[in-house]
Image (tube, rainbow, N blue to C red; front, side, top):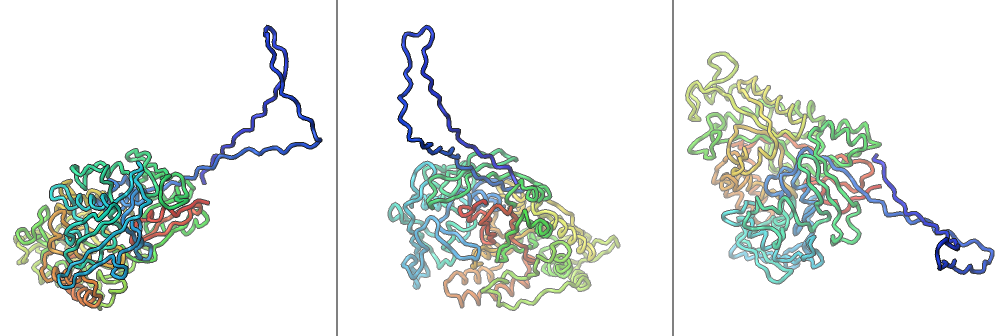
Length: 587
């Protein structure tokens, strides 16, 4: 562990001596000596200066900004949670709790008013009156309205889940705002909070710069438990506790140093050596290795499985975003996608590269309460995969091991080779790298040649304006992990499968999957009637299993390793590890 510096004040003992000074005309008189009682007066002990507490967190790369809604690479959310608050958030079990709000609005407390006839709803948020920005300005309803208007600005705004269902946000008084919905929106509690969103300061952020690019996303004005003190790019960020944070006595830790350490082996060793206190998103192989160092390091595992490793298929030709005008020459045929699923041995991947932490799943609806849809488990069957590719018109004509189009129905010319680029993001580490290579090897055995590509997540997931690979459609296939936060999958499904979400930067439908029937089912799930939602989800599960716009593979753990001296860390698959940083302590 790091040596802790202790500073003590010194008790100065002044000895006064009365004497005559040569050349002086005045004399300094010694103070009169008081009669002694024979007792020795008590000695006052030196007063110790309170010890400054600090911890060091290590992450793989700089956060792109403090605005988690834009890149969504996790590092941005980590620092956002240190400094900013939303209206509400989710705990480690998916339960919502109020942050800026006095209480969670509901039908029961009158905060949610539903117009059944018109299918609309109003949600009233009452804000706490004891929260202020770091410059002393109170957090008010003006900030809520400002955040909404910045998001929906037609020129500089940015899509966030469910924003299409909001008509307006109205300020009622300084600490009350009403969100007017044009539909019944079940995800209202975390629309301006949760994993990706916070409320931004109206008096500090420059709306003309735009929600995705404003300077306050790089230099945030805090209303959360910590304040950004320093940011040295590619090296570290320093945070000091917010002295005006609204929870009495919190946070306990004075300073948090976030170091940029790209190499996961180095991050592991820093934990073992006591040079780091927290490693965000510790991958499965490292979790396995750290079992041998339990005296120095603990691993916090989320009680909920959220993150699902999945393959995204681009149904539009690489470099385009219209699957109808420019269908992908290979992947636009569902039989090819189904053959790829048959050709991947998920069980071996889990045991070999993920130390059995990975759990096989094959539908979005594997978590309670919606895990009742009875979707059959796919089987690893490379011979059936080969037969299906033959049926789809992909044959190895020249015997080089790579199939060519021979009567395929995707629009590719005969002789077009079955070669594609296969992307992932570099930050996850060895387990995902080996998985990517294994999948490429297995698909190579059935005649599909994949070229391995790895880039930083910020490059993969950035906006199309900034050249983001997925939003620009500049890929064939890629693999990474995602899943919905909390217990409501509706917004997640809209973002990944709704037709309107296939427009660049309008959602997360990177594969450009367009199907009106799916849109109707997702629309039907925007209700508070759980029976209707369940029926819609099961119909949707069946269609997605047949069409296979994404290939669901297995869950990954949400794990965060931390030093034994750091207490209170609770991994939260619905959030990021710093969600409860105000409760952390050191021993």
